[in-house]
Image 1 (tube, rainbow, N blue to C red):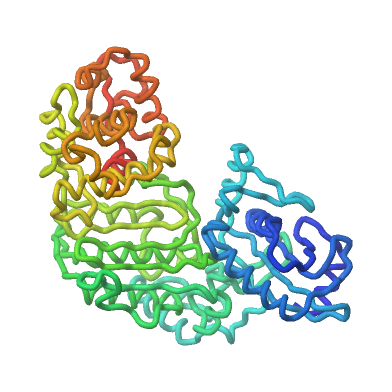
Image 2 (image 1 turned 90 degrees about the vertical axis):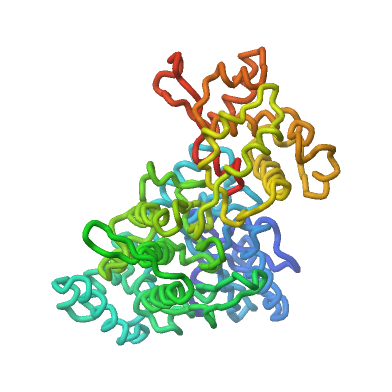
Length: 560
């Protein structure tokens, strides 16, 4: 941005997309609110060294450098702003003094400052935390915002790698020899694939972020997204560092990124073949083609977080920043897929690396049990999307008798628990763990996660580490002596709901007399959180209706 452009912005005064700040020795709270509101709305510019009236008072060079460092570090700190906002503030020398310019882009994610959500209206930052209608509208608007479509007017053909166009055509030709992109020049290919577009609202036109990610030179990508990187490592023997790793981390185009990650998987995981109809397929390829492609396609590229793929002895975990449509585990039997970067997905589909929307979740869930002896993958959507691909299958069955004794219910439920909990999958990290260690893993997790849900009444305990647990008499024998009574009830109910259980059976196991208080204190909160459900939800008063745990409830109970 030139000094003339800065002067023109100052001349227009503060508005919905321009904020003036006087230079202080530290960043005021109002700056974070403004940064979050700009990201959540239409983006904007903060000018430091300009007072509210538009008079340039300037800042000295040392303070300018300090503010630059503070802005970058604080907007990338989860303790302050979540998810992080990546910016590159710079100093412009005007005749009246130095002005620090901080351009904050509109984001496809919803950002918070200290858990509060702000939006920009006129010249003000408005807090909308708690206003479900406003937050719902914001989520709806964000769903139609794709950062891959951001236009870079000064991104030119010379910034793209000519060789990548030929590599892309080779990949497309190998999958579909009559694809129309094979018969056009490079510029026409970019136009027909929506990588060169015109914004009919602003008149701006040019190559998009997606064009840079697929065809850009490494220097081009790093200039646009300096924090972007993809990590891959093996942690089997050395769990604190790594046994093997892609070095340096990948900061290159998405075509080579995909090929490097697939090659890394092939080096470290064994082949397993399966007869799918009359076709022999490599299960490893079927699973990780989908997992890796979807991690790349659905990543939020404006985030400073890295995409990571880590191979452990019992599972592979892939995490990447994303724009969540909801928070929690995906039920792959009942979910509505939604494209996060449709133009990137279009290219990966042309390469044969992805299929229709949602195929990644469905196919991974189909093939993982065949590869891992019955185990199932898990998909958790949050600001960081997490996929866990188990390599071995572990269930709760060996611990049921211990657990039944530990629940210490008036009526022993061991036979009922065998019906429900025998096939519940444990997280792979709990391979061959002892009963005592299992309790030391699960109980702190219930307390930590439970405090996020006021309905579960976990606020009675703030922290319960292993050392504190071991000081409780019979901690590994009697759960009702370890946990407060209300929390013990919640855990026991979730466990009993592992197999369909009637209201009368629950009262019998607990020898509970007051039906209304049992519903009000325990069943209704668990239903509200969707941790349990009724087998006949449309007929709640049906005499044969029963309660059963959901995937969300299982994830909570088993610390997944």
